[in-house]
Length: 319
Image (tube, rainbow, N blue to C red; front, side, top):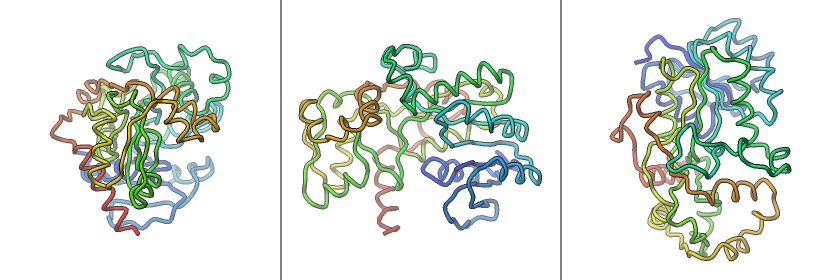
């Protein structure tokens, strides 16, 4: 239990942060959350700070409070941007968690372990390496931590796609697109090549639980972890859950027809890279390392279908 522990979540008001906070509170910790949204706490151990996490704001906050743990959810396009903030964070905590992504992994090892080749290590496309600002950027920040800050109390986490009411996901589709198609009786096309691939997807409730339980674990220091409960569902099985719970009709088709149905994938370079170097890969992630260090087991997690059902209910309540 985390009684007497105080944890700061930076940019922690979103999909993952909400569930990390929930689990930390369950474990007995006190939680401060920095986020730009207006949020009201319903727990005396949960405090929201409405602000951007600037160096000035953090310095002022740290002058008043030292945190046992910090989870930083901010994405940095450039290593230089993270370099400006890391020294401030690491000197004001006993354990810092840096948010990377499972998207750093290339499609060269199955199942995927934390030592699997990363896109940054194997891709030779100069345009991708110079201009992709997600998987490549996160991998470079990982390398920065290892090369410049070895021996410090940090941990890298690489979550799979983690859905909540703020973002439902089905391969390349967002929640709004899924629900709109269901309401209008329109079909969504899914590429047959992905039907039997393991989905790089999990409920944020599971992902948040894993991240929260990595805090303060000695074996987590200096390590990277895939954040995944190990359910092993394929995109075909995930699609069946969406069909069952939303009524959306899904038709499986060839890749060319799928891309023609979703022209933004080819028109938008970032979307195109997400398709080419992530969603069309088999994301069979080995969860054994994170389960071993957190001590969590299959019984500690809910199913993806339960997660979708829960978030659909949350969306209805929000509306």
